Amino acid sequence: MDFSPPRLSLRALAVWRRNFLVWRKLAIPSVLGNLADPMIYLFGLGYGLGSMLPEHLQQLGGVSYIAFLASGTVCASTMNAASFEALYSAFSRMHVQKTWDAILNTPVALDDVILGELLWAGSKATLSGLAILVVITALGFVTSPLALLAIPVIFATGLTFAGLGLIVTSLAPSYDFFMYYFTLFVTPMVLLCGVFFPVEQLPAAMQWFAAALPLSHAVRLVRPLLQGEWPADALLHLATLLGTAAIAFWLALLQSRKRLLK
Amino acid sequence: MATVAAAGGAVLTVAGLRKSYGGNEVVAGIDFSLARGECFGLLGPNGAGKTTTLRCCLGLTTADAGAITLVGEPVPLRARQARMKVGVVPQFDNLDPDFSVAENLQVFGRYFGIGDDETRRRIPALLDFAGLAGKEKARLTTLSGGMKRRLTLARALVNDPELLLLDEPTTGLDPQARHMVWERLKRLLNEGKTILLTTHFMDEAERLCHRLMILDEGRIIAQGAPRELIAAHIEPQVIEVYGEDAPAWAKSEAGKFARRVEVSGETAFCYVGNEETLPLLAHLALRRELRTLQRPASLEDVFLKLTGRELRD
Image (cartoon, rainbow over all chains, first blue to last red; front, side):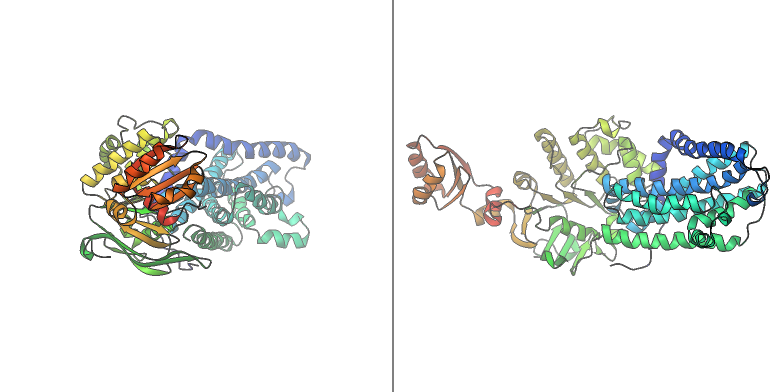
């Protein structure tokens, strides 16, 4: 097995641009499609469930439930977009359309392909997160300029889940394999990492478990920023996200080398 | 083996190449080299090691042993630099279905670091060559199999390569499309390009290849010019005998007339020298229940003689 460190080059951008060109052809339906699902959750739960809660609930940090949920939705939506791109779309390009095979016959190396895919899934996820950020800002749930700092955090979140998704893709025999990842990893994160309710509401043991999951770090950064506060342990959370992205990228690369360069 | 070209003039040299997968030696020590401007064929049954050899040459698979020099660069060490000057037509089309014809070429040019303006300048000539002039904006789904294959060929030329690697370039095409691809490949050879081709079609190899080698189980079992191989390995004439009674006839009678007989199903293949043709035909004329076909021996006969008639899966 080839354990050599990643050989990265700017040719990764050609891979990114290829994916961007495909996306551009379907940009509007793609953004609207990515927006619809989280918005239904946001309005349905935000207004429906939120109306049953007392206003300015202390556990929510003094904001309305829908404003609390809005910041969680940005993170969950970014995670979902990155995961779908790094799983289903990347798998199509690797295994079904053989786009990667075509690219590997050119001076672009596999390391560049994986890096290009990572950056692309991270970018596409950022667009998804950003679209929601724009909508909730327009609705008045976000007022602080600190929210601008959430944008790089969203990108880091996108890279984290892009990297994790690419590991799964490099192992997947078929599309069906991805269901395990969503059921065992993505869905638990949506429910346990503070998207819908504060993690502190969980039993202590589950809080520990939740804190170890990457989405928690994204929520711990994005929520305060959108509410105009500097997050506690900001650098630690950011480093955890980026560190996870880097390690995941490396593992995805090793497994992809084993799979495709055999 | 380096008789064809001195190392300096060779576009590709492969020496002592070996590759195993899980104890199974797929390529078991092969040597060959391609001189500039020649078309070299890599023939062999399924699983003979053709595609593995191509992958090793491109640096996509690391060989267990052997030395490869591709367009002057050592592979795998400088495979990336080597691939700058090589075009590849893969066995299965992997064009981008989301893109138009022109976008496929444009995006592929970027992988070689060719600027968009430069690729745009090259596109009309490439499409003209591929018989796709005026199809710039056509969607991939509207192209026939033959058109896709020609677009794949045009895509392999986007970087103006010195060497083209073609992995079964006409598999799955109708006769018209195959002839068109052959005509284009000859045109490229006339322009001085070098071609390495794998194929299952012996007529294709006979038409296009200056030299070829036949691989079986990872070893070279024959090599040379198509005509030389036919002369060296096989009787000059073949008389095919068909019919229900052909196998029985082959068993009892054919040996008296033919130097060698092979039976496959209800067909007997009789391999004869030129002077032995007439006596056999005269004998067969009396056996009205047997149909006959006389033809000169071809590369396919050589291939079947050397690799056997059993199926390889």
